[in-house]
Amino acid sequence: MTKMRRKVPPEHLAEFARRVCELTDPLGSVANAARILGVPDNTLRRARAGENEPQAPLLLALSEKLGVSMSYLLGVDDDPTPQIATHGEKRAPETQFAVVPHLDVRAAAGPGSVNHIVAVKERLAFPAWMLHKLGAAKAKLAFMRASGDSMLPTIADGALLLVNESETDLPPRPPPRKSDWDHPDIYVFGDEPRVKRLRRNGKGEIVVISDNLAYDPEILRGPELKRCIIHGRVIWWDNRL
Image 1 (cartoon, rainbow, N blue to C red):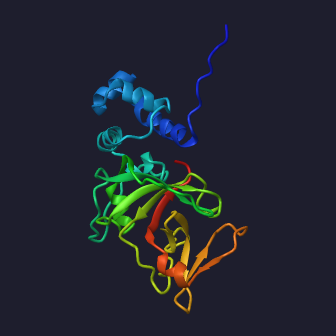
Image 2 (cartoon, rainbow, N blue to C red):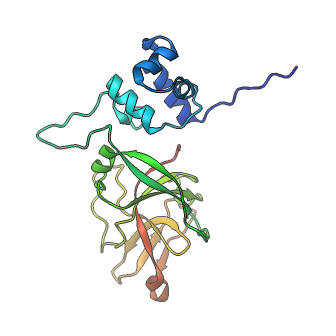
Image 3 (tube, one colour):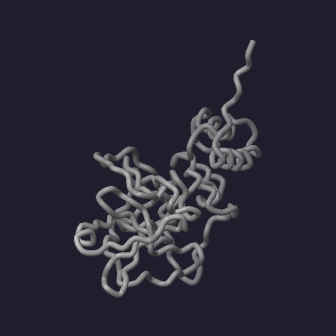
């Protein structure tokens, strides 16, 4: 009789499961932990097994009942301590979420991909404190997927992108980078959406730059420049999700 192999969860789900187990093991049985958290037994059981994507109700329960940071639960950092406001700084509570549409569209990190229909595939919860830190607390936002290898090693094929659709004007020059992780010049643009670095040159033309050195820069000028539509700036992405 052939034994069925248990499906191995993706890396990010395996890590989420490990953290959930670490947090809930001291609570005893799964049933007791679920009762304390106020979530269904099966929800917690599947999360511990790495079978479910992190969902808002469980994330909220873990954060509020066990006093751990949302960034830890989502794998953004390894410090479970909730963030504390300092020097009078006001921060959005970690347990608040913004609901962002996930568009059924791929922004090509390469030559371009045709999208005849742009529909809302689903709606995803995103921590409000992260949007506050990204400077996009009240912006019009959308999730979409990257497609292709031209933005490697920065953005991988299939990466989940968070796009600020309120930023559709390309400045004369990119703002200075605040850190090594800051990328203020990555945009989604074009009738056939693409994700690239966009910069203006001295002539007002747009220089299209790939991070993958196998792709040469392009220059949008004349009719191409006039037709160029900027859909928004990429303010966050995750290559694992």
